[in-house]
Amino acid sequence: MASAMSGMVLATLAAGQVPKKYKSHFILTIYSKYFQSPLIGDFVPELSESGEIKSQRESLIRQVVTPEYLDYLGTKFGAYSSVTPESPVERLQARFRTWTDKVGVTQPVNRDSRLSSEREALRSRIEIYPLNSTTFEVGFIYSDPAATYAVTRDIYTEVIQSLLGIRVHTLANIRDAVQRQLKSMPVPAAASLVSAPPEPVNGAEAVEDDLASVRGQLRALSGQYTGEHPLVIQLRDRERILVGRLASQRASGYRTRGERGMGPTGSPEGNRDIYGDLAKKLNYLNIAIDSDREHQGDYFATLETPLYPSAPLWPKKSLFALWGLALGLFGSLFIAAIKENFDRSALHADALGRMLGLPVLGELPTLPVKAPANSSPASSAPPGHAVSVR
Image 1 (cartoon, rainbow, N blue to C red):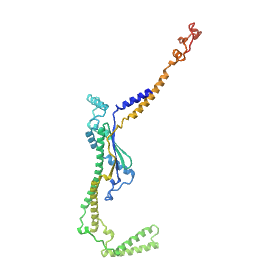
Image 2 (tube, helix red, strand yellow; image 1 turned 120 degrees about the vertical axis):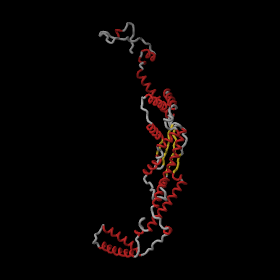
Image 3 (cartoon, rainbow, N blue to C red; image 1 turned 120 degrees about the horizontal axis):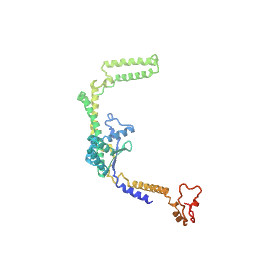
Image 4 (cartoon, rainbow, N blue to C red; image 1 turned 90 degrees about the vertical axis):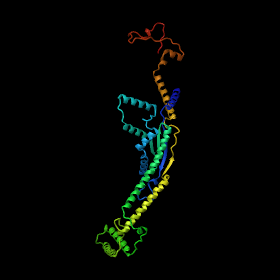
């Protein structure tokens, strides 16, 4: 038991000498409204699949950890081990590597390779864990608690600014595309933009609707009957009559719905409709951009802010004490088993006599390896001596 307690005490003391690691983190939720605005739903489609939503959000957070930002953290907070080695072991390794480079034992590492390894080491200290499809935990692990807290707060600020910048940049790109489209179109007359009286509903539009209905029935019947079927023949006759009536209406100046809805190269009314719709979208985009600048917190929720680490993440003294207790206990049992296996003291005559409280009458003499054939152990003993068995 004493060895088990000694192992626990030694392990606890050793935990105080192991280089410490501190962790600070924050928990951030990105709402679905970040990817969608009711004003511009036609331009920015909403994500639907949970896997797509999760990967999209995680990708937006990881975009912050760029090589330039890692260099900024390493320079500002001394997070690069080549600048400020963390532990005495790392400092000793750095000095040994410098000495081996000077004497020519090892090849000096160039600056780019060293910088790349430093970036990877610093990137591995930044942890991003998805708690669900919309919430993520972002943490930083380092040996200095003050630097750990400062770096975590800097990462938190950078993530928020990056997410807002990406959203505003997306909206600005759509706005610029709409503006370019508007500039490429001829500007309609001011009167037509203010109000354009709809064309009167007359019998021509009814003829156009009847013709569309008849043609729909013909398409449905063509898969069931041949062209000689009475219903098909009747509908064909009706179609010819309606086509003739519509042709006479067009000759008198009527324009069909398809002709009125032509593109920019079509009628002035078509140009006016497209231009007005794009101008409306442009106004919506401007409103959305201004709204994002004033209500930035509507797209994120910080469930936990970065806190100063109160205790090291590693080593855990309780865990080291448990390991020391287990090691001392099993070590003492192992040593006892070994000692018991090799200790034969209980088989000696003196020890056996003391244990049993009996006098020792004598011991057998040491016999040669090859004794004479006619001799026996009893006959070779000196006269007057008793024989004891060991």
